Length: 383
Image (cartoon, rainbow, N blue to C red; front, side):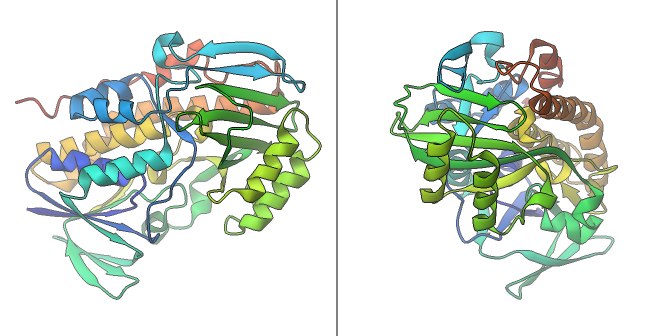
């Protein structure tokens, strides 16, 4: 029985726990720094091979039942007049509004429920040290625990603490794309019915508002030019003040949305960044999801990469009999080109947001779909 420690209980970590449970021979522990799962958050998407994967691993029906059911998106001008629209069923369900979208917090809760019976979860703790030998990794935890594992996986996001421990400071690997984004839940004051509205105003910033939870609430995204030097990632009040300063003079519903931001209890703010690393593993430690290869929210591919990466890593570990070196090498061979294509999409969309050739531009364009669909899933679960 191979003992696997996963750092991070948001999306990529539980996805790996779920996929490992589809194979025999793995005992999984998931450790999460936060005291509980974080609710709310932006809508995340399953596109192309991600939808195929949900069917393959038996999650399609449950995730579809929890999706936002957004029918499409319209771009509007500062007076609220519609400029253009795109429906979710267009482009094979892989467009700006994907056929399958689900709130990040809802997905995290769903995956926790799917895996709590097969993996041990420890909330309110985190890894503070790792010591590798030829046959195991000793993990030291903030709680004082000290335990041995065969494999450790860092799935703890863009600013992965585990990556810092093993590979060094964030600045070596994070590449800002010049956008800052804030997410929060608000009242559905526009009375949207399974619909999203997109507004941008020159290079100054923009917003996307969509109805969620049977139209009772709205999910709000605010975007503005900037990078990590503009805000302290730990200072929520400062982040909100920054957005008010940069966006307070914009049109459409922006002033009202900024007021709603102040009243929200699930505000989240971050850079749009890429994670670029020459290798994703070191000995018995592997990185997964945004910790290894974030493609930025502007790619719309973070959840796809997390789930597909989890499926490939679990499958290669099972295929190799738990031999980590062979599994890690195979994971990188299979994932590298797919990740590079998705990161190209994220970078292109961030650059286009800054240039604003046309305020009605839809982020995901037809020529980008080849990157989004650019991986063939191995069949690890065949009888």
